[in-house]
Image 1 (cartoon, rainbow, N blue to C red):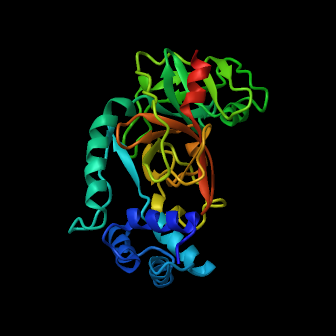
Image 2: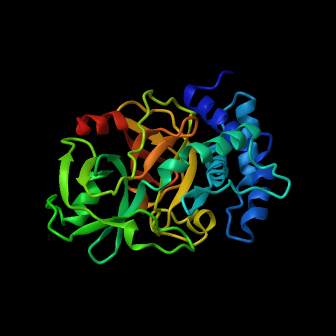
Length: 314
């Protein structure tokens, strides 16, 4: 029998995530990379789900859940160091990731390097991490409207010295005085979507390039931002994926999910609440397709297409 569209997409998504590995092999290799951590024992059920889908049948709910866990375990987060994006975590034999993904990531590392320094951590006046922002124009920072709401206790109007953005915050790296930039005023608020533009003296940092084409389901994407500790909303993968290191700049690999349609883009990059406002890059050309706004554990992440942000800039 032919699979319906939803299950056919799941099968293709699992194939893209696993490459030549079976679910059993993939989980074993992830365990070898991150050590003896509490990874759910889902590979046997995930293998049954794959076998059932390949036979053209629908797996049980438990099998589908297990396969989703395995796919999510293949969504790593990677540090930046001195503005340089690191490699994807790999086994000694470098046989975990599909070869085409390894090549795509290598090219993305080069293309995104000039843009990493334009992504910063947004903090309130006490230095508490609220979200992520990025340079979107001359002295303009893009982030989520809900980030602004948190910073202003719902007033959506900035007082002097209310907040700032730090264009570094990397693991085992110190920030310099020039990395911290005050956010002065609100430039524009989208009337219906979770997007705002804030004014800040970004000292010549370049605006990120926006995508000119709409991504399709299955396209690989990368969020770059500052994931915060969020164990209540992401209990299963918090320790395994993020290794207990939060609030520092990291890139998360994923792909566009089915159901995306302008102005909404859905993706499965590994993110937490501190990622609000992160740019969502297309891996193929390192342009920004969307601005991440929220996530639902083991369901999907939601982002707003940058064509809506471009309208605020005009």
